[in-house]
Image 1 (spheres, rainbow, N blue to C red):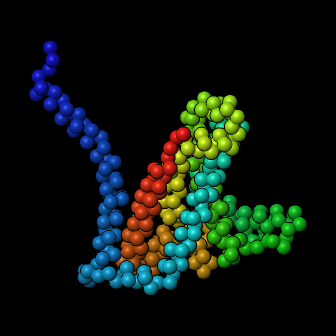
Image 2: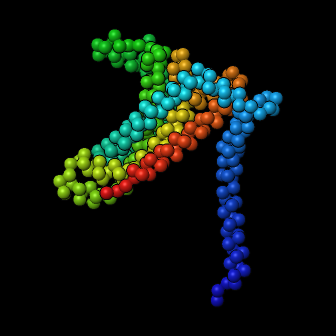
Image 3: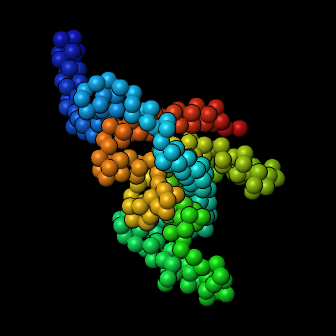
Length: 296
C-alpha cells in the first residue's frame, strides 16, 4: 500500500531542509569571504571617505603610470606562464604515464612544489638565484660560463623571467595530476585502432589524445590564468615587486595600496577591476574552448 501524498510531501520537505542545512555552512563561508568583500569593494570604490558618490578612484587609474605598468606586467606574466604551465604539466604527465606508470612516488614528487609552503619554497629559490653564492651562478661558473653570472632577482632584465620560472614550477605539479587522470581515462582501444591504421605517435596525439584532453586543458587554463592574476605570495618572498616595479603584479599592488599606502578606496577600485578582468578571461576561455572541444 503506497503512502499518502501528504506523507510524501512531508518527506520531500524534510529532505529539502536537510539539504539546505548541509550546504548552509559552505554558503555562509562563500558569502562571508567572497561575495560580501566584493560588494564592499564595489561600494568603497564608488564612495569617498565623506560618503559622496564619485568615480575619482577609477579616473585615477586612467592616469596612474604605476598602475599601467603593473597591469602590463600582469598581462605579460599571464601570457607567458599560462601556456608554459600547460606545456610543462602535460609533458610531465605524458612522461609519468608512459615511463613510470602507476608510480605513487613520482606523483608525490610532482605534487611537492604545490604542497610545499611558499616561504620554504621561496627560500630555496632565493638561494638558487642568490648573486654571490647562489646555486645558479655557481653552476655557470663551474661549466665555464661565469661571464653569464648575475643578480637574477635584482636585475630589471632577469627578475620577471626568474619569477615566471618559479611560478610555473609551483603550479605545474598540481596540474600534472589532472592530466594524468585524464590520460588514464582515455580508452586504450582508441590509440590501438589509430596505430593499427598506421598513424604515427604525433598524429595519434594530435587527433586522439589532445582532443580528449581539451576539457582538462580548459580547466587548467582557467585555473592558471586566475593564479597568474592572483600571484602575490612569491613576490613577498622573492622580489617585493622590484626592481623598479618590474615584478609588481596586480594583487601585490593592491596589498601595497591598502596596507602600505593606506589608499583603501583606490585599492578597492583596482580590486573591482581585477575581478572583472578574471570574469572576462574565464568567460572568453570557456566559450572559445567549448567550440574546440570535439572528438573525431
